[in-house]
Length: 109
Image (cartoon, rainbow, N blue to C red; front, side, top):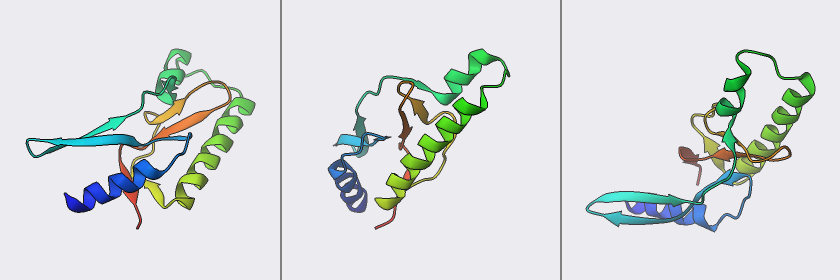
């Protein structure tokens, strides 16, 4: 638990708009609870679902892939590695921004 608290304190100190990191935590009856900031937007999965297997444009796909690469580069520069990146934890905040939900991370210290 001590190592986990240290990792969470390290994550809290990062100020990155492109990832959803814990802003606080508390322990109650031997359970650790993480508190996250609410992010407006939808998951990539929710965005694609109404399209019913219709293709998105190549331009739109390239845009999202490029933004995702930028987000992951920033994360890796801060030694944050996602252990389960998928369409449920890629968040589309608006037409220009995406975010990655880091509820499961590997912190390389």
